[in-house]
View (tube, rainbow, N blue to C red):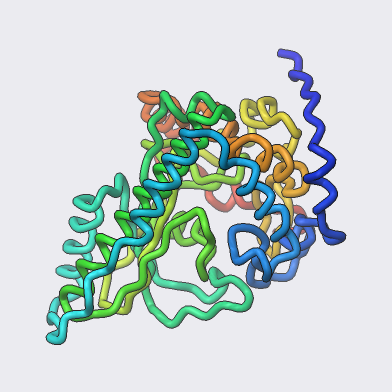
Length: 335
């Protein structure tokens, strides 16, 4: 199939705000030495070089009533209070805490939940995290809405799910606090102290896709993340490899559908890790002008309802019980 032609040209008033530094440089594209991620977008605008573009995005996406309603709904969730920390700490073992937290997450609106131990490399530069554990939460999009991307209906759906992620995170944090232990919730779109995709992969949410989002074995790419940081004793979940990475190496659906041609065809070195990468400088202008876009996760074959199970089975037949993790992660220059 011939590759579709895209004629997107960013608005001059947006590009006039573009900083002198490339977003790819901020992200560490091409760097082979490991380092912590630098804040770039969705942090406080004053602390990032791309902050003026972030403000421009918000100012230019207020007009649509669907977007405005979804933001109001999300803000009400963000403004809701957490439960206070009870004066008498509950004494539970790791198995009891883990089971209770997972039940609270699902009752609070999460569709998937996983737990992993915090790692310092997941913390943004300029931030500190002292808690030992991170509880990851995932909330699924409504496929009928997200598949309209980049229309406003899809943008509103993303906002609604960020709200639901915040609601689930607050439910989990409150459940822990009601038992006398501190917990700190976080949900998007504003970035907190932790880069959420790496712990989500570590706790079993799936594999990184070519489009830069996680592919889950059931939800595909069509979900959003939230998290809770805590020190209560917990049991970690294992990563889940089922062949999505290898599938992406042979698939071009998202890259062909991307209007600014931002999805790179091959893995890249990024802060010491060889992985899929989306060109920030190409993606952001289109993202800013199209309600957050979301085309790539909407067209991902894994995101179509009822398809993921078949794809998992197909990859299992191709690779046996599990794909060769070492082969999938092999990078140029590695033995």
